[in-house]
Each structure stands twice: as C-alpha cells, then as structure tokens.
Image (cartoon, rainbow, N blue to C red; front, side, top):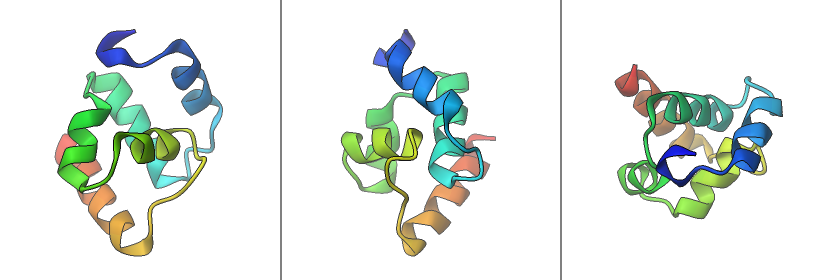
Length: 76
C-alpha cells in the first residue's frame, strides 16, 4: 500500500462508520495518499492516534474534532 498504509488498516477504515470524523479523515487521506505522519504533525497528535481515528478505535476530543473537520475541508 502507498504511504505505508497496510491492507488491514484500509479494510478497518472501510468497515468503520463514516459518521466518525476520524474515519472520514482516514478515507480522505487514503484516497489522496496523504501519510499519517503528515496528518499527525498538522494536528499535533501522534501517528498512532491518527491510525486509531482512521479505524474508529478512538475519536478526537471536541476541540480536536473541529480542527479535524477543518483539515478535511482543507484537503478537499
């Protein structure tokens, strides 16, 4: 997979509920080939946190959720 995304991560993201902002972020990043390390750097979190959001294992806090939504909009 490109940008180091595993097939497993892609499948987990695909199976997760798209209502989650983290899952939506993951879908955009996977589609646009944006590395999780870049996302983590932009949002001030760890790469593992980004992966957990992508798979809906965890959700961003309210304050971060707003930044994630803005980042998704920025990515188009």
